[in-house]
Amino acid sequence: MLELGLKVLLSYLLGSLNGALIVGRFAGVDIRKLGSGNAGGTNALRTMGKGFAARVMVIDVLKGVLPPLFFPSLALPGVGLDPAVSREWLAVGCAAAAIIGHCYPVFFGFAGGKGAATAVGAIGALHPMLLLPGALVWFCVLGATGYVGLATMLAAAALPAWLLMRGVTIGDPLLWFSLALAAFIVFTHRANVQRLLAGTENRIERAMVLRPRRR
Image (cartoon, rainbow, N blue to C red; front, side):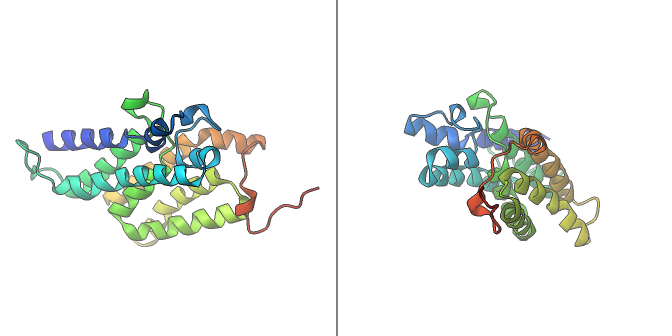
């Protein structure tokens, strides 16, 4: 169990290296004081441009990839590999810890992003093919509505649905991870839900297939 605890902790600490805040420090800005105040890729793109957002995304995606991909097979000095610990459950545990670290980074006052980019990296490490249904739903919803937050929530919700349709059993760690991730993404996007209900959510009209006519 020592291996499990240490690797989950390391995954959380790696996830706490928030890309928007790190890149922002080199640029002399605090992304949390701009736009929506969220330290994530979408707010970085809207407030600082494509170059800034691209650097943020690289960091945030990579820290989602590395823990579940490498930590389960990594023998820590003095700890080794515990045969009682399932490698599959350890992988999803490391992935979840990295995502939580991104949203609640210990290095930045527990105020981070909403977890989408780090989740993409984690899913890519755990089950690359799972990115396809998520991406399909995300692009379809964005193209139909222009709402990034709505597209992200529905894409996350599509993951467990796709796994169940593919016959994945209820005991599969990946299914439990996808269910927890979908709920967590909705939770981190709760402000988006409130703005959607109030009709004040920001819309990217240029991303829409059918743009609303301006009066």
